[in-house]
Length: 187
Image 1 (cartoon, rainbow, N blue to C red):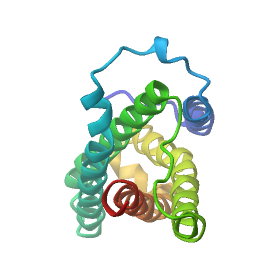
Image 2 (tube, rainbow, N blue to C red):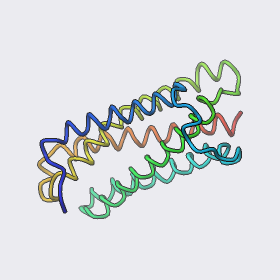
Image 3 (cartoon, rainbow, N blue to C red):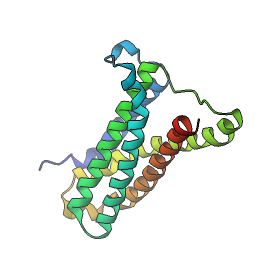
């Protein structure tokens, strides 16, 4: 297996993070024209939030299994589940950004103003903040793992940063499900 050059891990983390966040903010800010993405039937657009909630729940499971696997020394299972978790995150993000682009922005909260101000907005803000913080952390631990043989990974900050990333990732995915329930279940 060919590895990412070790001296490029931080640089690649920075570049990937900036590009990823620029795309996210462009979509959230309505800067990507809807004509730049393929059209989909209305029912597809409507089902994306549910699909993303399911993806989030599955990702919570894969992150948890991956975390438990590495604690038990099952490196290959950890690798597979964490790559699956990252794939789920990428799928979630692609669907979310697609929906934002097609609909022109975030969905308005349909519930009472008090719930919006004191429950929904704080939960959404924490969810978004953690998701933003996770992006460079995830790239960093993935690139660290890709840049070294398995035997050298314990000498890196992969485990330390990975624990932080996994914790924040779990919280962010969980809050995303709560936001979905508030938007589509409760109200």
